[in-house]
Length: 589
Image 1 (cartoon, rainbow, N blue to C red):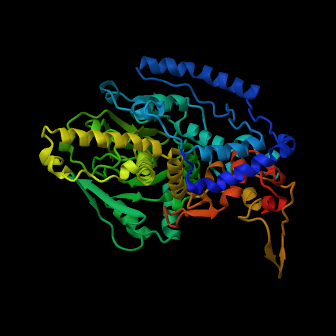
Image 2 (cartoon, helix red, strand yellow; image 1 turned 180 degrees about the vertical axis):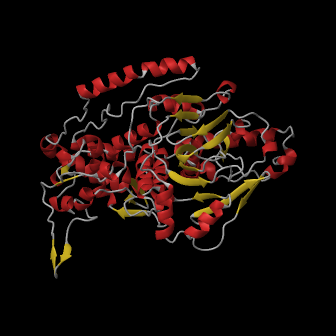
Image 3 (cartoon, one colour; image 1 turned 120 degrees about the vertical axis):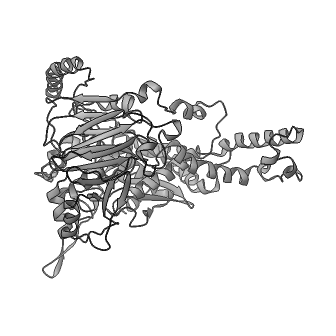
């Protein structure tokens, strides 16, 4: 298979690298970084103690026919960031690029991945869910309070290692979210299969995430608008109504509707709440998909929304008050893992008993996959405030194939003459709906031809390029990272030249021995398009979804190895002199 012309710049640079390979191998070999795998004896002892303390919980749970899980020890981790030699890094980048066009045979295991990964709910799964109920869950405070981001010193040695790597931070955040359930067990047994209920009996577990007091402050201090940011809703007599006035959502109007029995939905709290922004921006790196949020405030004895199912994986965090939830299994296979949400359903359309009916209290969590019908109503005694975190919207194999197959077909048409041959002049006489029952040799030949061409399309599938385009969309969806003051001061976001008392101070000169690293692991993506290499990033994204166009820098093929080297070196710092570029001038720039 020929390499497409747009890869020629990579090929030229690859040859140039090979010529210099021998001269630079010895100097670059010194840049190996030590393995960061750290698991202390104290952490292991703590984990053993935690597991021992949970034995009584497990026994009690079994007596009540409730399945229990061991507490995940968030301190027990190992990094998977083993570093390779700089020369290998550069060679791998180009060999990967040049192999992107290699064909797949029809017997390749990769072609069977869809059937292997296809997940359907069996009748047994549809009638099951997982519950954990315990008052002895290990206490884990909200990991994104201001204290969690406070650093005593600008020195990297003062930064705990788990904060130094955004991937570990993201994993720990999810561990906190589903504590005491283990993450491995969650994705094996629960994810996209059935609901999970965590009854923690810790009212302050979500302290610092969001509150009605913060909501009131946001209404007073920001130009929040109805419909764009706030919905006023009601549900009675099997009918859902949206009662939004026009214009700004003044506090007096919002609270008046609330007092009159209406629910309030806050559509994009991450735009206004720093704590929700922190939570979502970290979780999005863990899931590899946009993490959205809605906040629901419902008065006592009220319901704001009709039964429905969503197109997202939902994590319900009960923040204040209580709410009774009913969750129903999907009606059939077509409603399992749907790509689009349902409309408002009438109860007469739900011909099955709830899979789960539960009253959520502060500190509880409820997860259910997309396609599970749900509804919620407050008790007569108290109001409810909860936040729904939404994950994995349109992030399926099908969505990837929607990118991949059109590109593969375009390439096949351009490069294979068989795709450009004319249709048989009389094919309309034996093909089409009206002729589908016809017994005709010409019809069979036509169908065989189409099947043959479709089989050849996979040979032109640029799978890595399609994944890059999917990742590019994710980068555009993402919230920008939340940066602490030390990170800002060590980057262009706050460091460098400033105007002070009539003159410029803080000039920074980049020297070869200055050490650098990426601000976060998941904030950039290298994408090859339009005969160049672009670095897409999230750093200038808005907290308002897609307020700006995708942000990128044209770096060219010659600078691409340096960016990939930074990615592969993360979370370690590397000196500018270590960057795999031809000249010191290129490295500093």
